[in-house]
Amino acid sequence: MWPSTSPRHWSGLKITMWGRLLVIADALLPVYIMLSISASEFVYVYVYVDVDVDVDVDVDEVKTMFDIDLSRYRIVDLSYEVIPGTSDDRPFDIRLGTLQDGTVRYDITRTHSHVGTHVETPWHFYQSGKTITDFPLSAFMGRAVLLPFHLPPDDLHISPAYCEAEIGAFVRPGDVVLFHNAHNPEIEQGHFVKDETAVPYMSTDTARWLRDKRIKLFGFDSLRMGRATQETRDIHDLLMHEDVCIVEWLDHLGELGAREFYFMALPYKVRGLDSSFCRAIGVVER
Ligand SMILES: [Zn+2]
Image (cartoon, rainbow, N blue to C red; front, side, top):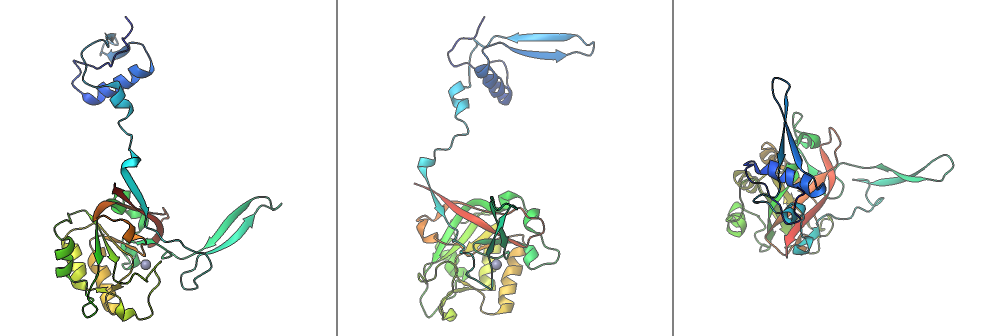
């Protein structure tokens, strides 16, 4: 008996995973599936299963189960373009490498772990902190909530009350939270304005609000992380003590056009790094 060409499903097998595996095998090879059961007496019992039986898994469904319809989403590049040779402070220099006959080119780079859009880990601040390779990839991706802050010139504090009013109802534990500077549209690609005091700032209270929301990853394009070095350190301490990594120098956050989306910023897999440049993206439902 050869199987029919109609959608075939297994009945009598209660384990769906096995059912799906067997249906896949059946779709590839139009033969009977043979189960071999080894008994303790070394007697092999072969069970032939007739696939023309009642069904509960469709072959077409199996073929498409991992498809993602990208036409339903926009992918927004949230990284800024690093231009080699433009910064002495945070260099990204490229030197040409070739074989002895000069035929093949490759680039030899000299750089800095905080160049461009980058992910910082606790090792950046703590001697016992985790490094890039100590985190699972899931720490760098997930559901994200965007706060586009726009504050009056006489109060530039991105305060906990402001955060709560703007996005407090939407942030869930385990989320990514991104702050977008909609206040200083002239700030692009991580460059700071001349008058830094005109740039909104977060405080230790803001960091405490993020920590208490139990977010897993925090990012921003341009703001002041505190108004003094100690406050900057305290903000990092509050978040990184909870293993919350920080994505700095994001770009194009204004192009997301959505409050909630999927975010990803995967770092290079280099053992022992405190920070790594990354390609940050947002996936937004159309
Ligand atoms: Zn940094």
